[in-house]
Image 1: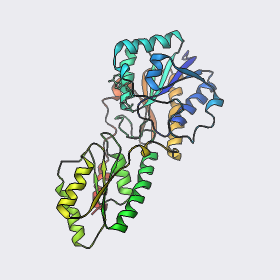
Image 2: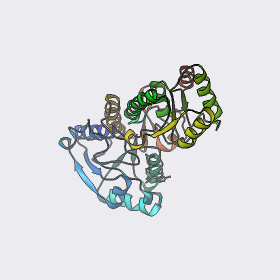
Image 3: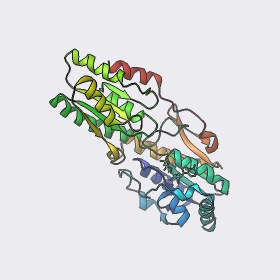
Image 4: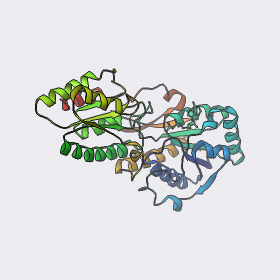
Length: 324
Ligand code: ADP
């Protein structure tokens, strides 16, 4: 027996569709094993200030279809300081919490690694639309965000075809190009600009557009991941070099919200239940991950250095072929 009787669950960092399914599965699975659950509000801030709510099965029964996170989230600067992590740990000990399940992205994982030094058992679930947690091939929210971006770009493309323009659409992803790659391929983009591949050479994009223009095309779509290059600057370069009117759309936060897709609900449920399985077998300081579509887990400190999540070269090469 693992001896786990009471746990806390929280969501932290950028919100992501599917987090609610993970919370739901944590609560259902914990209840099944006689473990009680408190929900910590606003991520690591709620641990420091001890803002919590009891979570019973009835509280989470119908949250699968809700976007965002019922526990709210935050970027918590204080958690970077040891004194606040100590305060959070002391709150957990005072309230007899045996383990924490933290659902979040790369930053949340880094916070968890620091937090283990306070003697807290913390299990992480990767939840972020950016798919930027190195140890796992999937993070909750990516599928919904890629679908939202695809739908939005389809609409932008319609207008760009009608007017004979070039549309430059910036999507989210932090330092990863997955949303750009997937939404770009799905919408038949003429160029997809990815952080993993960007060499600062605008000419390859403008030359391709010029070539197509010479072949009689009159509308173009460029999908660019945030942070790679300045989207307005890219549009300006296209205008300068090709003479084609170029408009920028920054999709922004619409990619974070909305009803989770079936995939995000399913993976949220699987990952939430798996976190409880880890605790039941006595696991400490682990992160849930997906490898070859199978649930596995790693020690959180080891996980930060793993690279299971590099851009798939076949997908990338195909994106080039399909945008020729
Ligand atoms: P995400 O988890 O989506 O990547 P953030 O990068 O904002 O989002 O990280 C979430 C929170 O994790 C931060 O607000 C902070 O409280 C905590 N965190 C991030 N990096 C560290 C770190 N190196 N040490 C301690 N806590 C961290």
